[in-house]
Structures are given as C-alpha cells and as structure tokens.
Length: 105
Image (cartoon, rainbow, N blue to C red; front, side, top):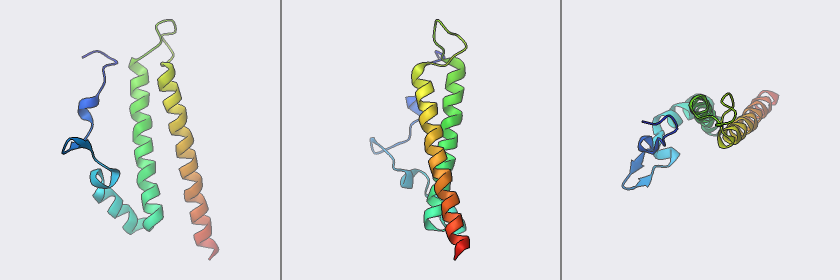
C-alpha cells in the first residue's frame, strides 16, 4: 500500500451509505450524556472525534509530504489540521462556558 493511499475502506457503511454519528457511536453518546448531560455529553463526544481526527491527520502528515519540502505536510493536510484545531477550540470554549453557566446557578 502506498504511503498516501486513501483509507476509504475504513469508512463505515451501512446499507450502502455512511452512518450518522448517532448510528456509529450510540454507546459513547449515551454514556457521555448520562455523565455530563444532554448537550455537554454530545460536545464531549465531538471533542473525542475531533481529537481522533487530529491524530489521524497528524499520522497522515508524517507520511505524505510535499516533494520539494519533505519536512512539511501537504497543503490539504495543513488546512485540515488547522480547521480541526479551530473547531476543537470552539467546542472547548462552549464546554467552559456551559460549565461557567452551571456553577453560576
């Protein structure tokens, strides 16, 4: 397998379509909602998924480099990493805000 080969085989399909997050991770969502509440639980699962995506993107960046700049990941990987990081920052901010609202009551 080539280092930058697509990993589409690892995508989860059900009946020829992609599964929703609720179909793919029902136990994790249910457990998190029980522990943190409905909204915080879903945000916690979103944080886990963002973290997993960042780790996967980082691993991809190790093997897929610009031909002229072997130490740098490709532009698409850099963009994906940046967007994932920004999304994670927003979710973290919402979680902190929700925690602040909870303690203020």
